[in-house]
Image (cartoon, rainbow, N blue to C red):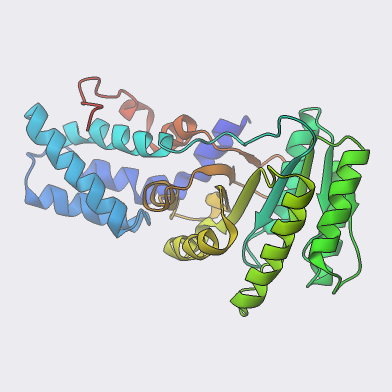
Length: 316
């Protein structure tokens, strides 16, 4: 089964709660206030969030008036086009270094699958023929170091590490030197995920940043925040916090296959102006892939909704 089919299967819970409910609300009815109320309930139930829901409803009403739409089912391609446009607003491609190793800093709270995500990304790039190195920068937990070593063995990549309690910035420094000397293409750096002491985490990240930028002025090339899709709107709260303290450039959204809250992808793009760059839909090492807005929209909406209304004005 290809990744798109797995994605479509993984989004089945979100599709059942959102798309099928929307279709039921819009089926062969005249457009009225009740239609918009049911549409609002459907959007909120998929954890698209209040802000994004209100934005979508406003745009849908505008298009309905402009196109003089009569029946509610005509709103479905309008909705899909709006959602696809939101997903396309932010660049999804990973920023790559022009010379030397691409340094990717990975952040997120404990329990979201941060270390596993790094291992899966390492596997992905190794399968693309890239030389990858991993840095065990979460020195706060011995389990995090051990887990990263296991994933490094699975992916066939070297893990730069020190003992538990070591200076995380020192580990990152060693990893950068190793990446240079071994001519690595990509260096993934794990970081601590504790938020109980925000000030401590900020200080640690600031020190890591200083070390990285001193060695490679244009790095880190990416700061990826790992979020658990099953937490829904709580993922938005985490993203806002890390955006403040870690200069996040993109999102990795895990566990999309286990939730009906996949609409949070749309909310992240629209509310936070942060692109979702990777999505995870399973436990296997190839179940994490770069995010494709078009494939996500195709997987979210049934085949008969794929025809986009060409007459929708793109100059909103």
